[in-house]
Image (cartoon, rainbow over all chains, first blue to last red; front, side, top):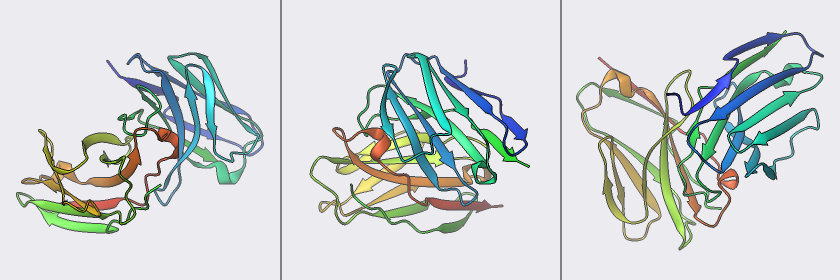
Length: 114
Length: 112
């Protein structure tokens, strides 16, 4: 059973389009995250949710809107896609918000903007 | 938050022991040291965590000297499949996980 699953795995789309990435975790964790990893492999936190509530929003453009319908799901919707949005987006979860709690990551969604 | 410094890359050969050191000179009393491993086309995976001295699990060992200003991840007898990026994180239990940063990581390449 996959612990943290993201769909789709690959996303190729035109500039200006709107797209969504879905994430589900079956670990029973309280906290979920979205990260962006650019071409230089730097992993940057975007959002953190705890029990469906937004905890962290790290200066991400308003075009990015996370939604957590329940504790097990954290989806990411992106409006008006730009070339600079091309990256790999990772969803993760942990039991609790503390930084010492191990985070469990999905395998990523590779977003390519044409 | 403690800033961490790791080598950008390391090369090794199959069967060798690999030691990756992370410097964290401004580590705080409540901070723990956590290492993640990221294979190509996969998300990072937690491998080990420690506070002081030595921690060992089935994957790796973590050595932390008394002053805790650095830590060393030790991978025994690496194989080609250990080729990955290794990230060192330093943060406290009362810091939100989203505030701890992964840094640049160390790209380990294991050669036959």
